[in-house]
Amino acid sequence: MAPPQVRVLDIRELSQVARELKRVGADGRSWDILAPKAVFKVVKVSDLPFPAATILKQEMLSVGADVAVARGVVTARARRSDVLIMGTISQLEQLADKISAQPFGLGQLSTEIRRIIAGMVIPQQHRLRCRGLALPLSQRPHIMGVLNLTPDSFSNGGQFNIPQRAIPRAHEMVAQGADIIDVGGESTRPGSQPVSLKEELRRVLPVVEKLCAELKVPVSVDTYKAEVAERALKAGAHIINDISALTFDRRMAEVVAESGAALVLMHIKGTPRNMQRNPRYDDVMAEIFHFLARRVQKAEEAGIARDRLVVDPGIGFGKRVEDNLVILNRLGELHALGLPVLVGVSRKSFIGKVLDLPVDDRLEGSAAAVTLAVAGGAHILRVHDVGAMSRVARMAHAICGTLG
Ligand code: HH2
Image 1 (cartoon, rainbow, N blue to C red):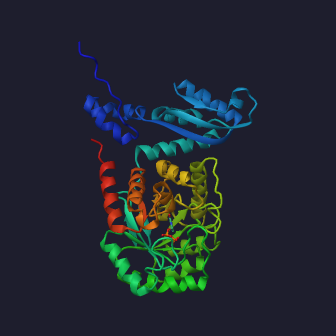
Image 2: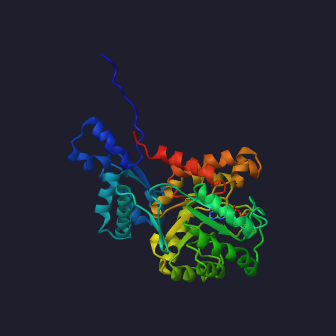
């Protein structure tokens, strides 16, 4: 008798299950029941009280799954514990039902688990609203072209810092496939000194004004200063790209809220001047995730609706090389925030360090990083080499969207 033909399928998401159910000839009516049993997830919950951790463990065991808790929970010595809930989507659904009326904060956890599951069942379609425009970010990765109006940026510094060179460069990037132009008047490279408000306004305003009048794509302004944002928005800017996620200037939230513009909330540890002085993380993804979740809440409280928000892990902003690599490898974890994700890897120093190459020789390294960002579900790629990276992103997206 021929040996059985056995292989393991690469199934990570619900969308991948249907084709295999069809191939084995499963009854179409059973798909909704079967598919959630084919996808396994690990959900981490931080700092739960001891009784909640114990109940979770019991309830997951009762549905044939499990929960990892701190040793002190088993010996009844720990008052609180982080937990790993490990099960299929179907088992997580059962857990959410079982704990919905339980005490110790489990009711809220039930709601949160249901929200996460809902995001897996029907992946969110992000349409970023920025004033009159709407970007269909879930249809394909969007390219944000970098326009540095600075004399000292780590890349392109001094190349486009006069309007006569900046404006044609913006048009060129749009022709090469840029969906957004990101204008910056201050370098935030590691160790950089802040520029004065006056100088930043002098660099940014004339260019923003002209680009908003001439371009069909939205114009974003890379600033953490509320006054620069306010004046740029008056000149017609559509997006504010705040590398401090509303933490450097208290007035920023109010300025963006009133304008109807979109807002990029980026994670940074420290300030550009000190961020690369020995950054350390216990768990880099946890720190970025929870920071961004808090900043999203802050933006919403200020009146900026979720369909105007984008999150960004801030590659290179207070991170070691290995932190940047982990972020790119685990980018998909940020989708549980329920918002579009922007990633800026272009020509950055972690590429230079891995490949031992200067800034002008990082095209291939940037391409590899953009590919993985797209595979991780990035919605916006902030890049210098617009033509090359839009082709890289399109190709990566074509592969990722094909399930066989
Ligand atoms: N990176 C840079 C600047 N702004 N904004 C977002 N949202 N995400 C990023 O990763 C990001 C950013 C750094 O790149 P660049 O503008 O080319 O350099 P410099 O700060 O030296 O002008």
